[in-house]
Image 1: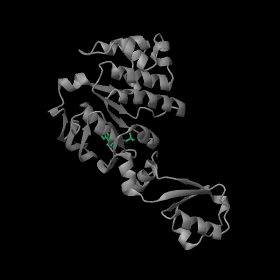
Image 2 (image 1 turned 180 degrees about the vertical axis):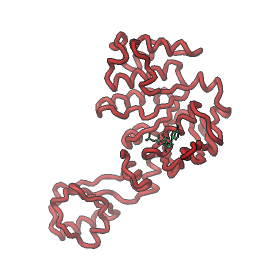
Image 3 (image 1 turned 90 degrees about the vertical axis):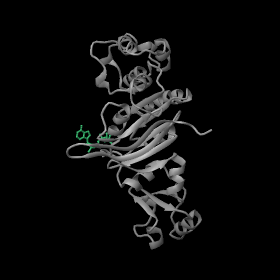
Length: 297
Ligand code: ATP
């Protein structure tokens, strides 16, 4: 049986006086899916997620939650991870959790949320004294107090160090295992590859690609990337090799769909191959190809 769509987005537009932040997008979010919104700075991701959260009103178009416009059911069943400015000063972690917990009719026992987000040792700590990773865990816990059916995370790991980011991914994985629907915006392609079942890539308020990470990569690329330190290559390459260079800095990347031939060409130039590495295409490559932009500007 096909999975029902928990959110259906049709012809969604958000027009500001100077900018069309969201320019008529359509997509569906299947129940239980971790759905990623990717795009360069200013693409319209935050605006889209805020429209889906019901925090801002669309200029036109619709967002349906379980087939109905966003209403009280949605508000009770949605979890939103707010920015850290939503935390009040002079409150402890426990007090912050209690404050949000009392706002909902249906709630998880606080102890369960505390254990899920590993906050047990931090309950008496002032909000302002939390590290970046601890603060994100508290904000996630607040988003989970009502046992939400759909969870919105807007760049949840921006600014975290790699270890804290990985810990956060594990947490999200646990929530996914609980069959929750998650909407996630991120600048980190690795994060999207690890967590997301489906993605849309946005640019200038429009959707420019959508699908599962594997489908997106298979549909756009038939080649692999061969990497070598630049210092090992002569300054001038044959035209055939030059045409395959994707990127050249300290590392040269060749995009090739005939690895054997590429290696023969390199051997002809007497390039030592001990440090040669072959990798598959990643979402990062796709993102660059589609938007022409680095992820962070
Ligand atoms: P980032 O990755 O930098 O967070 P984003 O993809 O989330 O970017 P948005 O924040 O949705 O992008 O912004 C999309 C566009 O809409 C930008 O050009 C932005 O300047 C504009 N915009 C967003 N909010 C407003 C607003 N309240 N008033 C006017 N313009 C806005």
